[in-house]
Image (cartoon, rainbow, N blue to C red; front, side, top):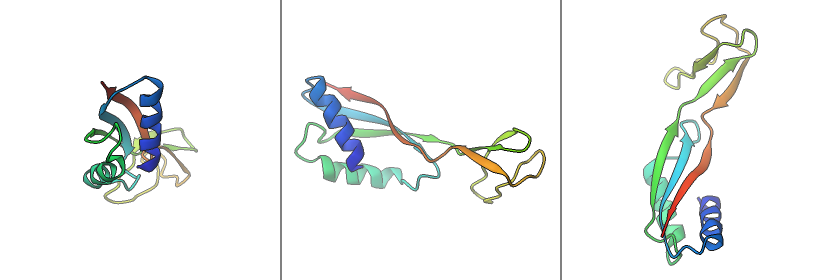
Length: 109
């Protein structure tokens, strides 16, 4: 969260923002970031900055994998943690998404 705060404060400074009201984030389901905790930690870090009181709007990004053998793409089943191709049963998989933690946009005044 401290890196996120650094990014948005720099953006605010470069755009002469008086206040940051919202931060739109894309967070992968495998990133181990819990939305409520993220907001609480962000609130603590952003106190007395132009981002004080800003709301984190979180879009969860599903985990997608691609088979390196046959090219089949599928959603990773986090409930079972089965990491093999549904089509050819290969275990040679590549993670395409699900670990993101990115700022997609910032709402400023």
